[in-house]
Length: 279
Image (tube, rainbow, N blue to C red):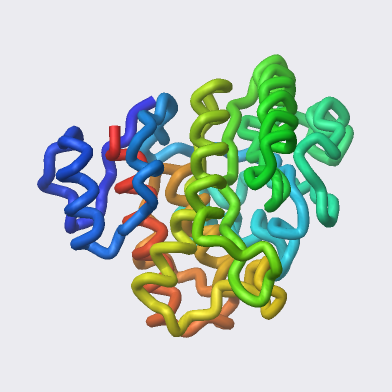
C-alpha cells in the first residue's frame, strides 16, 4: 500500500528525510511526538482514497462513548462521499473495560452472524488502555493480535490497530511515559502482524499541545469526551480512507463549533501525515 496525501505544510517536502531533521521539523510544526514514535519504520502504509464499505470495530468503552466511534467515522465518510456512504456497513463490538483477548473474533467475523451478510473488508482492533503499561499484558496483547490477524485475513479482511490515548488527571495511572509505552506497543505489534496503525493516541497529544484549552477527555481522565471521540474519528478516517478530514462538514450533528471542528480535523490530518512519513 502507498501513502501520498499530505498537509499543506509538508506537501512540498521529500517523503524521506533524516530522523533528526524530521524530529526538529515536527517540533517546529507543533507535532512534538515522543522520540520512540520516530524510531520505528512502519511496514504498512494507508492507501490513498480507499473505499472500504464493510468495517468491523472491536474494542471497549473508548469506542462506544459519545454515540460510538464507528458512527462518527461513518458520518465523516457520508459527508465527504455520499455514494460511498450509502453503501457503508459498519459494526462495532464493544465490551466495557475489555482487553483485546476478551472478544470472540471468530464469532464476529462469521458472515451474517452480526447482521452483515458479506465478509468485512477491514477489522479495527483496540486493546485495553492498561495493556501497554504491563509487560505481561503487552505480551498477551501481542499474542492475541497475532491470532486475531490470522482469523481476519482468513476471512478476507485487512487488519488495523487503533492506538489508544493516554490517561490525564485525575486518573491515578497518569504518567509522562504512557504515550511512549502505548505507541511503542502498537507500532511493534502492528509491524509484527503487518497491520495498519491508527495513531489516535498521538493525535490527542498534539491536540493538547496546540489547543490546551480543549477538553478531549471525560472528567474521569480516561474516557474520551465528544471532542476526543471526534478527533479519534477524524484520525481513523484519515488513516483508514487515505483522505483528509480537513474541511469536512460533519460536526457531530452541529454539537461541535465549526472552528473547533476544523482545529481537530487539522490535528488529525497533520498527525497521520507525519506519523506515516517518518520512514
